Each structure stands twice: as C-alpha cells, then as structure tokens.
Length: 334
Image (cartoon, rainbow, N blue to C red; front, side, top):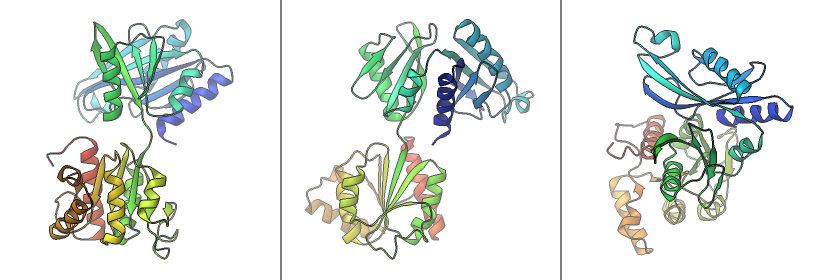
C-alpha cells in the first residue's frame, strides 16, 4: 500500500469510528519543496494526524488550520512562502513556496471512491469545496463539469500529474489517483536481479517472467512476483496497460519476441529490449515480418537504457530504470 492510500485508509477508519476528519493536500509548489503536488495529510478532531505535506516542518500550522476547518466546515487554501534564509526551518533546501488545500470530509464515501477502482481523478472547486469524480468513462459528483474540464482531468490521469486548472473563472484542483505502476521483466537474468529491487524502490509492482524454472526462483528474486509461463501467455494474463513498462532482457528471440508481440499490441508506456544495434536491427526485421509497422517497432527502446556508458549488470539496470522514468515523465530528449 502506498503512502497516500495509508493516509486515506486512516481517515476512513477515523470516520468509521465517528470522528471528524479534515484532509490537507499539496496543490502547488514553487522553488524548492520536499513534497510533490498531491501529497496528503489527514487530521482528526483530536489533532492526531497521518501523512505529510512538507516533510514535517509546516505540519503544525497545517494541523491547526485543519482543526478550524473541522470546526466550521469551511475549506482553506494555505500559502507558505519562505526566503532562502528561512528555508531550513520549514524543510526546504532553498527558498520556495507550498500551497496546501484543507477540506473537511463529512463521510467516508468519497474516500472509498479514492481508494477504489483506478484510475480516477477528483476535481475540486477550491472556492466552494464542491467535488466531482472523473474516470475514463464516467463523471459524477456535486460539481458540474463541462467537456473541457473533463478532458483536462482525463489528460491529467494519463500524464499522472495532479494540478490546479483555471477554467471559466474557477480554480479547479485535479487530484489523480492512478493504479500502481507495473513492470514486467522478461527474463530472470543477472540484470533483472539488480533492476527488480531498484524498480520496486521507485514505486513499481514488478513481475519477473521466465519459463525457465531454474532461473525464476524465489531464492534469486526474493519477495518478487514470478511467472513461469511463456512470455506471450504471461502477458495475456497480466494485461499491460498505460501504467506498465515491459522490459525484455533474455537476449533470446524465442522469449523476447513473444513478449514484444504482446507489448506492442498493448498500451504499455514503455517497451525496451536488450541487445546491440545489430541485434535490434535483426529484431526489427522479425517484427516487420510478423506484421508490425515501422511506427510500432519504433516504440521499442533498443538498445535498452540511457547512454551512460553502463557496462556491469548493476549499471545497465540503472540505465534501464533511468530511461523508464524519463519516458514516464516525457523527457524524450534524453
């Protein structure tokens, strides 16, 4: 369970036990900020809180404002700005600004929605506190949303970016709740042994796929989901989507090609394959013969990884994960 889910779960538990609750959310940052937009903190009526909006240095002020919101029901937008000299006192490496929105949660139904089926985005009018929910195929809630706003919310879901939009004279905060990032490593090889724990630390749910049962073992990949199905069968079951990276690392066409076939037919945001430029060229020929277009094949990052001069398995794993993160954030110029 991620940090945000833990905050929402605790808020739900408080509400279920009859306590009053406010939720504080980072809605904007400028300069240096230790917590990204979307970070949340929940406060109950006694002042107990869970989560963080600043790394611990403005939480006291936020909790005080949250208690006022619990008391009067009015949403609040808090703006914390600091100079370079004050930065250390509020947890910033240098001068910056954090804007936090505080709202009372009258019942747990909205929190259940945030914790439920994903992707989903909340759209909140910062002036009134009215809120609606947007999914890929539905819109509902107290806030009347026009087509432009719905499109902005759905694009934010695809980009995995929470932010404030000014629409029709209103400031609307879109908070995205996406399904976990997933990574499917095709090949229980030496590089995978380094890549898997790195990817897990970066927030990916990782599955290693390799039909060679002597490779795909819990001893070699402790605490990791393993599949000993053939890669095409495994991906048919796992169903890569726009939150998925598929990494083919066996260097064996018998294993990599079936995985790439399924990955190219999916919405996976990243597809990579190990091998030299010569290997990549031969792979492209095979995929073209299988009916894939040049545009399809161009989706494959191969040779895989950023060009950082990596040579050891650990360094190659660093280059692969770096490239995946870059693609996720649209840094295609790297």
